[in-house]
Image 1 (cartoon, rainbow over the protein chains, first blue to last red):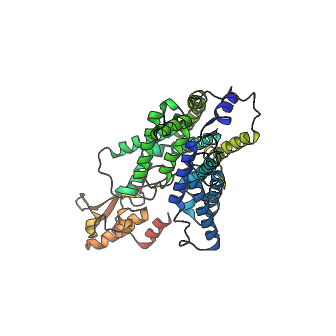
Image 2 (tube, helix red, strand yellow):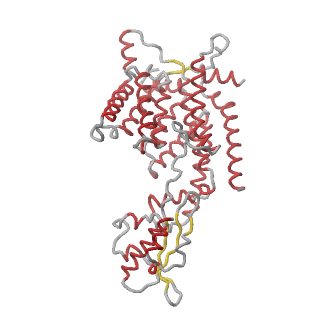
Image 3 (spheres, helix red, strand yellow):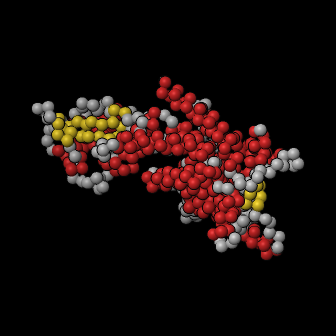
Length: 269
Length: 187
């Protein structure tokens, strides 16, 4: 039974490729946002960093425009994975942070999707030749993107599941570090609010591990997830983490429903 | 520790529920198109299957070995421990003057230092450690320009909970000497 479910829903799962293409474009823009300035020649013009910059800009431009999409995406993934796992531990500490790793790994997983079948130079060229494929292909790579998101939610929730967090103390420390300074808070109910917020975040993260996959729940799980990540973005220094998670949610959207919706938005019937 | 064990078992219970949930309701409800029944008619794409399994395992190895099994972090694997240490370097304090008649008078450190919360150096507004609390106390003593019994109430952040400043409890900050500052800094 498990094998049948796995082969039907993962191994041979097919659908519209527009979601994967949108993910490719969003990730390329996020890569520029996170690393575009860091790798620029004016920051470091050593030969290794110049080679890195060339690789980064060429691959991500190809990825954004969809020029040999999967090759460009795989090349971009190799570049940013090298930044996270090689350059990072060897002197560029901010590149090792988890929000950068999520971005790099998502790019690698995007290369496993048919991300060039839609919204790409590849497709435009094929249309001109009259050989454009149907915008439908195996989407097991999108399942892996979803698994990646669920993994991140589960293990971050697991990591927070200790008394210091549940009691609200750790969030309180974060609020003092960012906003209140060393003055004891005079806000009534502050500690209780911190405790409730901490418990809510842990509960939501555990819930999203499964909740995001269930299509009939998505009308409320998606807004809840967006709201939680928006709060992180506004209140905490999370960098591109929020925008990356927003982009990755597309892996949970029904590919064909998204295709139809985009058609309707474009005026097609 | 019972609390820790409790959280541990709850986590595993949730893990089990997640697995059941995704198997029964998750993927099954995602696509409105009927599932392709191609397993009998099409050969299994071995490379695809291997890639899916390899990526699935890779994503779990880092967190399982480090977070669940307590092993060292492995290079090339992420553990998904995010913002774990963030916010530990902060103390929340209340400086006060202990008067001979036993009463306490709160001291506004910004007022004594003739600055404001926004203009003061970061280490005065966001005091990061017990040692810096003591240093701030010393500065306040100098600025008061009179013999004073300046004390501090408060606690500092840590990985788990607020930790009381036991070394400064009931201590007149105006009498601290250099060796004691150094001892605090070493902590």
